[in-house]
Length: 482
Ligand code: ADP
Ligand code: MG
Image (cartoon, rainbow, N blue to C red):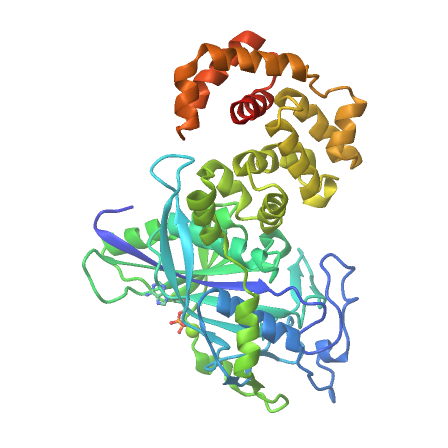
């Protein structure tokens, strides 16, 4: 960016909550149904209908707030945001103006590290608020007509408003990725921007480096993908710099991003809260939450991905290349932990099987596409560790287990892949080596574990690499102790 200016960005992100039914009626919601089939009198705002609150949506919003460290309101009202447009048949949208369910908090983001495959730099982006509102219908404009689909109208939508606390398109990218990861993690939303489950408006301003007062902001709309958001912002920064450099002033306005033409056009000048004639919705009681209800949601939040990643590094010594695959996806780290609960000895082997082989077997499908269970994986890793199965053959066994669900031991035996070890001959060899190398033997017996490597090396030479290391080690230790 330009050295003379500091960029300031705040985002307003709308996310569709994953609930079975809409926010104020019992109509279910799914994506991709035929237009106007998921509607009822309440959704269409027919006279005489009344909204009935879906409590599940409130609790899910509270969970999101707890995850991001927000303060949760014990009581808050609903407001009508009045406007006249075909996407809102009631001529108002039920929202929360000055009593959001969640206030403050932050979203932790990870910016790319100094080198690829290394842990990046982490920082916290401050949140202003998260409130709950109903979504409106979807208008599609054609050459000579416009069509409206009310299927998504009335579905619960949370609006996550950040403070003006980001300073580059890269930070915005990391922020949106982090939001997506965290919201998926607790199953609050699928956050698919292509399906409109996550939508983003970006507020952008610039100011001379060192200035304390914020510059005039411009709001960008119609940003349809994460890369689209970043491109739109990049373009807007350059546009504002050009305006300022040519001696003109930035006008506060809303601009529409056109990703195809890589440019933006003015939609409207600033609108204010009073343009919407907000007032408290008289049809709904305020939301009230007990401390116990909030606490229950707080307790439901699992260990979050960044914290998990750090723990895997510190406690299991797993490298970033592996943790950055396993941690963002709860099903993957759950699989690892279930495997380690059965066989805790070799976390790095288990993690690698999941991050490489299991994911390859599943392709783009969920984990359940593979028949492998944590029990299977634990058994497989143990077989290799014990020297009963070579690493090479384990790959073949894994693929078979994944496709058939037959336990690894059985696959190994049926395919004749079990390593045949002549235990008597191996024991004799061990005795021979123990007799020939008294020094490392004495050291090992005195507690110096490393001395075992010398003996293992000799044994490998004798067996010409034909017996797996795990088996050699077991035989050797048995002889040394026996
Ligand atoms: P409004 O009153 O226009 O709704 P808000 O203060 O509620 O504005 O902020 C809306 C969004 O714009 C927030 O995400 C906020 O962080 C962001 N924002 C506010 N002022 C600026 C600014 N000067 N530059 C960039 N973003 C800003
Ligand atoms: Mg505002």
